[in-house]
Image (tube, rainbow, N blue to C red; front, side, top):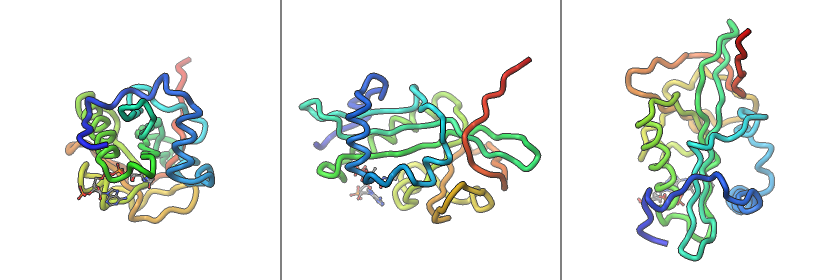
Length: 178
Ligand SMILES: CC(C)(COP(=O)(O)OP(=O)(O)OC[C@H]1O[C@@H](n2cnc3c(N)ncnc32)[C@H](O)[C@@H]1OP(=O)(O)O)[C@@H](O)C(=O)NCCC(=O)NCCS
């Protein structure tokens, strides 16, 4: 598939869960549930307005991107809300054809239009830094619940946003008012 752009990307809502699972198995393998990224957003539901799908002309699901509510938890109990991006997954037989880029472009367009929380992800800086400006600059002092290659722990915030220098990444606590 060539020539895909953000107009070919739809919301993930309504896509068959089994098709999404099959795509994630194909892209990451069945061991994917042990990954640190899964522990960071454990128990959270993906964000319907920031999760996307790509289908080919025959209607086959060829790419998905999910985003999750997470937080950086400080020692003082305060949490800084973040959005965790990933998995970003493309069917192996159509990788490197622009589908990952179109999915991410759609996410970044949406985030930049809506003043969403800063983004965090575990991914290749050569890809996510090159096209969308993710860096490990803010994340050097962040703890994660599992092994991570530090250079792959990436964040992206609005230029005027201040990111905490320390804390532990984990699921976002839902605060309920009395
Ligand atoms: C990583 C992934 C999402 C990229 O999507 P894709 O549709 O295959 O890639 P794109 O067509 O958008 O790539 C565009 C460019 O980025 C490059 N690129 C793709 N993946 C890359 C990576 N992991 N590291 C560095 N560069 C990469 C491509 O070579 C291409 O470069 P070019 O334009 O100079 O030729 C996809 O390959 C995939 O699902 N991989 C397996 C799962 C995975 O590792 N996910 C990432 C962690 S969340």
